[in-house]
Image (cartoon, rainbow, N blue to C red):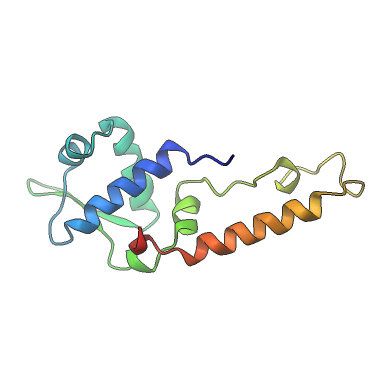
Length: 129
């Protein structure tokens, strides 16, 4: 079974929270408390999400985070890329050559599954979550 890493799960929870409060900036401390997420982990996620252009940060007394203007166009797959979780499903589809390459009868099937999976994830917009 495929599992969703905690950083993807927590990012979706955080994005959903920001989407419900679009006109306000949310501090990480408040978000961590309201969402029952570990502050230090959320802080690292916020940095990745900001670097990926999904959220924007404002410094100062009334600072915090809010969603970037184009966040609704981003897909679930885009989120995986931002978080570095767009890894190959099986090792033979990764960057390292497979020892069984050329002799493997199922590599093509894995490739079809992965391509289909990626295409589906690209159709799911974060605004749908």
